[in-house]
Length: 175
Image (cartoon, rainbow, N blue to C red; front, top):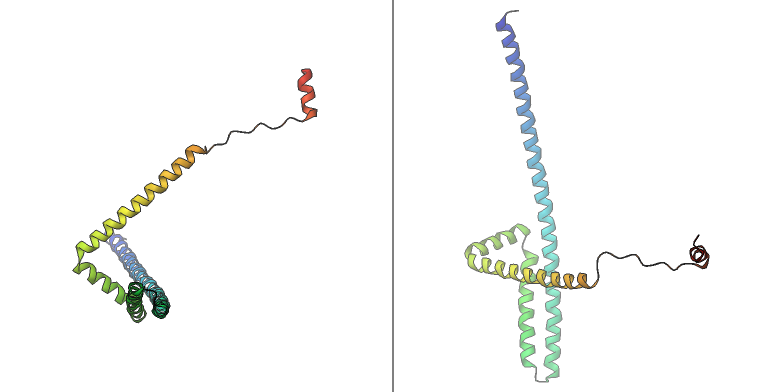
């Protein structure tokens, strides 16, 4: 066997290994894409069910508010402002409930994305306000935890156990 025959055999083996590695990579990539599609589908289905349920609950709450508004109207105790307010809230809840029930999860995400693109400063301001509220909440709870921990030490010193009469007698005699 000459040196060129050995090189040819090695390159054939290397080429086969490269082809197998490429095939393995392609198979792995297809599997990853399929897994991502399955995950996306499941997430979308869960989002659809969740938003439909929230929409249904919003519409139920709107119905309750309308009933309370009607009850306020029959009582006529001078609470026309409360009656108008509850009617307005009920109408908004009804529209929001219908919107959530009719839209698919992907459509809701698209709408949220369009809203954020159209009003970036509003979204940034809302995020800043939410962050500020979260930091204040965490600070308040940490102060409470600190005050609690300073009054009640985390380590407990062992409490002296009462000495029984049998154990006390040898101690008193010095034995």
